[in-house]
Image (cartoon, rainbow over all chains, first blue to last red; front, side):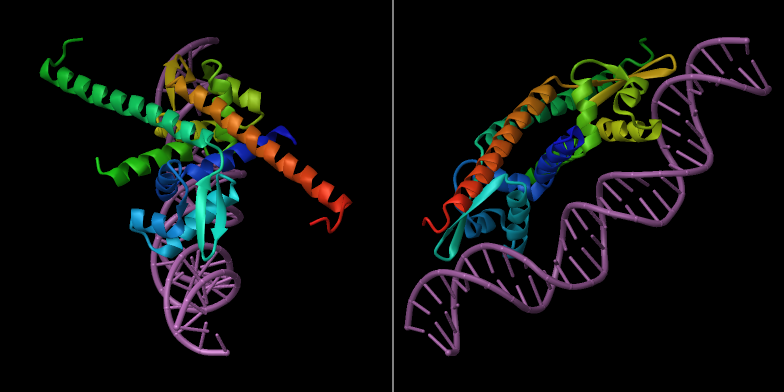
Length: 116
Length: 116
DNA sequence: TGACTATATAAGAATATTGCTATATAAACT
DNA sequence: AGTTTATATAGCAATATTCTTATATAGTCA
């Protein structure tokens, strides 16, 4: 596999996570397996939307589906995906903290103008 | 911040990683700070392309830029991004292993047909 | 078989991202 | 001031993703 293929593969994986609905689906699925109905109800979205976004996650092998009678249960395929989301959460937290800090800093500057 | 905004924020972060060139940039930058020129040379891409993709990473606050005379040096803003890439690498590895295993399994089935 | 339920997929307009090429800005140097 | 070097951005066609609505499939049960 040429290196460029590998980068494309990696990019595709991140692309799978790059949608608000898919993030919410994964945050539910990382806890436990769930049927499409459950997901649909939990997110207040219509069936088609949920099914489509699950299809994207399935195509990238992030989740797996298990058919049971007429319902299909989805689950995260690799528990490391959960860790990835946790790590991402820590990064977001740093970013937001940075932003808030910067805002506070800006306000401080405004209160003592020209002090540099 | 409503929950949906947060999910959009998270999705945007992953979107920043969802491009082969940006992955390669980050893999270089996680080692150390680099100028646009260095990145350009290392990846064999033209100036405009590199600058554009860096702009995407900058917009999502994944990297930061530091101007030094006429050159601009980029760096990853949060070292956790490096950890994230490592974790992602482990996930890819599991996936590919799975694929290879499946391929091997398929071949095994072909050799003993109808054995189910 | 027919109706019902759960899920998947198709089709196409709306929107966003990419890839190119050209141009702009800004610092340093003559 | 004019030129060179490093970087950024604009403009726009090509491509990919998303959203919405409609339809298809497949299992279950009367």
